[in-house]
Image (tube, rainbow, N blue to C red; front, side, top):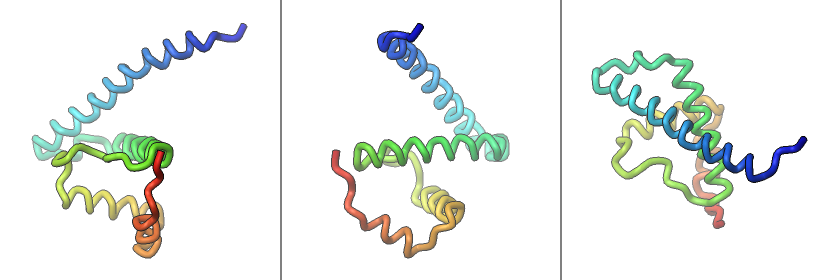
Length: 110
């Protein structure tokens, strides 16, 4: 028997707090590791999986909605931003010409 749309929506509502708790958990683990000066306390594979998932969701939302702030002002330093951006650019096998084309494209408006 097929489930009603109402049940599906209740299930997704229940899932939202659980995913927020997991994200908060990772964020608090990362903050604690950085505060202790031990970034290696976060396993590389966990970081890769989390970063890949976050990038995919961010890209999907930004493509669907238009401009979306990736983090709150002051949450990340300029150096941290550039280090991560350069790693993402290299991992995707892009060059600065590719990035410049994307950077100057018109933002999508909802």
